[in-house]
Length: 499
Image (cartoon, rainbow, N blue to C red):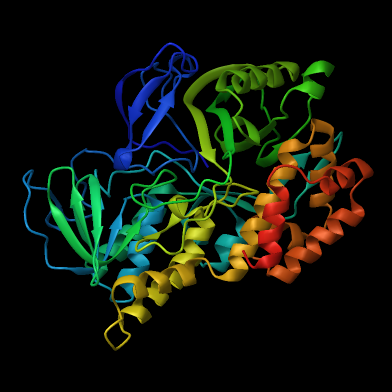
C-alpha cells in the first residue's frame, strides 16, 4: 500500500497555498501541490510526493533495464510527423493499471502500443496490499513478499480478529509479471508525454508534446486519478484519503510480532475535545520482519483531506502514549488519493482503466485486486468488438461503447453508487460512531465483510449485508445511517435506478 511516483519540482507556489506548497510535475503531466515541511522520500524537503493509489503510478526517465528490450521502447522525434499506421489499442501510462490492461489485451492477440513519459521497466518504489483469499483466487499468491495470518483491528479495548490473511505484493515480481506478458506478446512501448487527442470515424490520433502522432482504433487512458484525456462529471467535492507513515525501527515493537493491523481506532492518546470535535484517524501497521515495521496514521476520507502535519502529530502521540519511539527511519510516506470521484462519462470515445476510470473502491481504497480481476474481462470484450464484422465493427464509437459496457456494467455501477453513499455517511460520523460502525461491520459473517471490501459481492448480497449491518448496529450508527444529507439521496437514487 506504500506508493510513490516519479515527479519533477517546478517551483514554489503563492504563500497562501497550504504550508507554502511546492508544485510538482508528475507522470503524464499531472500537477500536484506539496507542502515542503511535510517532506517525502528520505526526509528531504524537496523530495516528490508519495501518494498511495493516488496519482499516476511510477515511471521515470532513467535508462531502460533489461526487463523490456531497448528495441521495444523509443522516444518521440521532437518534430511533428504524420500519424503512424494504426494499432488496435493505444494505452497511455506505465503503472499498474496500464501494465495490467496492456498485458491482458496482448494476451488476446490485440495489437497494443503503450505511451508513457518514462521507462515502463523502472522499478516501482511503491508497494501494494491485497487480501489473501483475493490473491489466491487469482492464482498469484507467489507474487507476495509478505503474508500475515494474524490480522486484527481495534475498535475498543479488545482486538477484532479478521480470520483472513493479508498480503503485501513483491513489487518487482508484480511488475515483472505484467511486463513479461507484454514482452512475450509484443507490446510496442513508446516514450512521450500525451498532449492532445482527435477522434474520427475509424479511431483516434494521440499527439505527444514533442509532436509525434500515434493512431489507434481505441485509446485507453490509464494515466491515473487525474487523467490526461478522460472526462468525469463534477458532482461535488471529492474526498481524499490522507495518511502519514514511515518504515523504520523502533525502541519497542509498535504492534505485535508477525501482525498486520488494518485499523486501530483507539484514541486514548487524544484529549476528549479532540475526539469529539476533530476528524477521526486510525493506525494502519504491519510487521515487516527483521525488526522493521511500517506504521501509518490514516484518515479514511474527508473533503478537504486531513493535513499531513495533523497526521504526523497524531502518529507521534499514538506511539509515545504506548512508550514507543522511532529509532531509525528508512522511508517516510505522505499519501493522498481521491476516494469517491464520479464514474466517467460512458459516452466518451476513449476508455479509462484504473484510477482514471474511478476503479478505486470508494469504501476501502483498494485498487490492485480490481485491476487483476477486471483487466481480463475488459480485454476480452475489446477483442470481441474488434473482431465484429460490418462497417461499425471494431472501430470508433462502437468499440468504445463495448469497452465501457464491459468495464462498468449496470451491477458494478449500482454498487459504486452504494459504496459512495456509504462513504458519505462515514465521513459524517464522529469517532465513537465510526468505532461502533466498524465493530458491527467486522462482526458480520466473514464472506459478507470480506466481499464488501473486495467488491466481490453481487448486488443482492451487498444489499443483504447492508440490511444485516443496520439491524445489528447500535442506535447511534442506525440514526446516522437514516439521516440523508447532501448528495446522499442522489447517490441512493442511482443505486436504485441502475447506476
